[in-house]
Length: 301
Image (tube, rainbow, N blue to C red):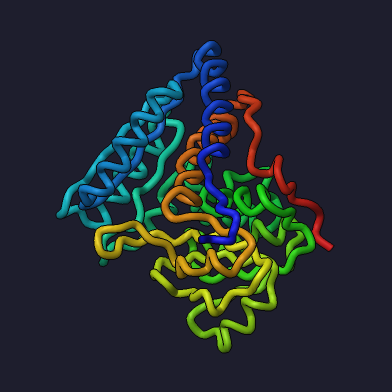
């Protein structure tokens, strides 16, 4: 029997989507037809299935979602040209890349072809830089880190907490560290060269893992009473799994599931980020709560 509280994202995601639907209705009354575009390269059947499920959600919210798969032979230039085209299209309010990209393509260069005001994933250097410099209210914050923070704060406030972040990638780890610092957490970053990972993790009250490697954090490396957020998503033996050993439910106080945790909430937050993008582009206010309304960033000290 698991002892940990399971931090499922379903109700949080539902609340966000209700907020988004209400604000989309107001935008449409003001003559704005929200539209988001997703660009994929050599999309797998699983990726296409996910994108189609997102399209169905978008339809229910009143948002047009355009999906473009550039196919198996698209090179960096083709990808970047498509992202620039969509960024320049005034009818498109949000642009994102279906990640990860195939080997050989430069993710960072591609991300920075997206207009920062249309960056619904919050991963351009411009948006990450604003977040890192504690100007999060001027940015579109990265979606997955928002989900990590929201799930954790559904259980415990993060201000003043010792938080370990395992992983330092651009898409989750680095922006997550910035957002945690903005919320007054004391942050320790762990990575492939961290020595004695178990000792570091056990010294923290909250552990957030974003590596993309199943089982990279074992149950033995965690401690009783901790809150664990698993942002990893991998497929192993035909099943979607996270980065944390499932046996951790016997040790920690609370843990997010995979699937049904960070990924579920991220999908909803991307639509909320679209509303933020529309604000930045048009000056219209959708009045939809942002991630910063929970665990608000504050002045550095």
